[in-house]
Image (cartoon, rainbow, N blue to C red; front, side):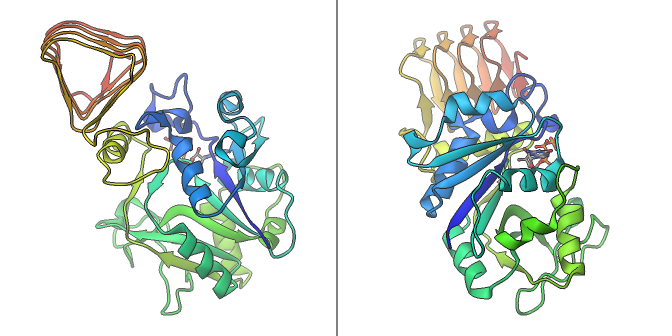
Length: 325
Ligand code: GTP
């Protein structure tokens, strides 16, 4: 009875365009490494060593980077959808590359959630409750922008409700769910399905036990430019610890071969990637500067993302989220 994983990394990431034009969202660097590296590290820390990446959009960029997973002490499989199958279809497709046995559990991660939740405790809760599915739920101040997930006193999920003006609870699906292996048989093959809108309500209609595991630790959906910047800053400044974050001083993460001009200051959890050149007298705060960018003298950049290989003219002062794209 082992615990395996599926990581959903095949979405288009439209909210992050143009960052996702040439790089899929899960491969964008957050605190100096592709976001997926943080999730693999989280899975491994919870004891998951075999995982399938469910890929579709720009599927061919994952394997060259992560290989068979042995460098991470994991076994990584790749499940490729030639046509995107939606979250439910992707889960079904990826389950086929894992050699699942009755009684196995599979942890499914949305590829764009950064969380500090206690995954080991979620797995234990799932096993002890013998649920078909156990969802990690978090609480938001205003649930109107989300579907909400009401629970009873025994943590049974009562419904999956669509967005509404007066949500009945502030608990929302936080994008990490554990399936008993029997659940995969209930999802049809080769058709587009949403796990949130179709599979989960279907499980309740069938009378299966679906539990909610509530954990209110750090949680962030990195799907927008502002959220991506926040995630990167929070990891560098150690608001959230990820074993995949490269060593740094807690103020900034600066590649060894980056060039910084005289009296240039870098702070606020900024990331300065490989081959970046920054001129004299610049101030860079809470900003991600991607590989090979060149920043002229006396620039002030706050909470931005600077495009790879872009050239930012001297004296630029900006608080834009996306720069040089
Ligand atoms: P937006 O287009 O900006 O909403 O982002 P997205 O494409 O990532 O969609 P969304 O945030 O709804 O997706 C949640 C997670 O599921 C992300 O990790 C996606 O990569 C993943 N995902 C969404 N659709 C698919 C799909 O059709 N196939 C696969 N393999 N993964 C998907």
